[in-house]
Length: 301
Image (cartoon, rainbow, N blue to C red):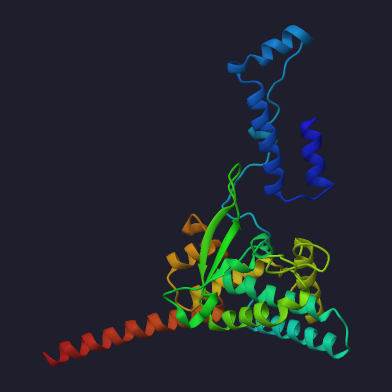
C-alpha cells in the first residue's frame, strides 16, 4: 500500500516533498534490511508462511531529490528594518503588560530576549530553546563582551543516526551581550528557578517549548502586518545575510552557523538589493579609477 500512502501524504496531508522523501527512504531502508540475503529472513518467511518480504519503494514511485534547495520559495530573511520593528514591538509588549500590573510581563520579557538571541547567534529553533545559562561563557579574545562572548550550542542539528552536533558561536554584536546580561542578572531570577538551568524557563515546566517560540513570533509578526512567510528560521537566515552584507568572511559565517558545506550557507544568504547595488557601484568605481590611472600614465609617458 506504499503508493496509496505516499499519495495520501501528498494530496491530502500536503506534506513537503522533502518530508515525503524522508518517509519513503525510511521504508526503503527497512525493506533493504529485511530482504538482505545475508540474514536469510526472506527464505525463512517463505518456508514458514509461503510468502516473503520484498522491496516496495523504488525510484519511480518515490520523491526524488532533484535540487539543492527545496524550501518554500516564499521563505526569506528578515530585513534590518523588519527586525528593528519586531524587536521594538516585543519590548513594547513587556512595558504594556507590566504597566497594567499583569504577571505576564516575565514570559513576554523572556520571549523578547529569546528572539533577539536567536538572531544574534544564528540559532535554529531547538538550538535556542535548549540553551542553558552555563552555555554562555567569556571569550578571551573578545573581553568587551564580558561573560557572554561565546554561546555553546549543545543541541545542534544532527545527521541521521548521530547525536546532536555541538558548536561554539562567537558573539559579534555588542548589543547581544548587553541584552543577555540584563536577562540573566536582573530578570530571569524572578522566575523562581529552584535549580532549573534552562536559559528560557517555562512557567509550567523546565523550559519553553518549540510551539511557544512559533506562536509568539507569529503573533508579533501578524500584529505588525509583516510578511506571513517570515518564521522563526527567518531569524537565522537574517543572521547569515547580515554578516555577509557587513563584510564578514564567508568561511567564518559558515562555521558560526554550523554548516558543513559552504553551498548550504549560500542558500541561506538573501542579500538586499542595496547590498548588491553598493557592491556593483564599488566594483565599477574601482574599474573606472584604474582605467583613468592607466590612461594618465600612458599620457605622461
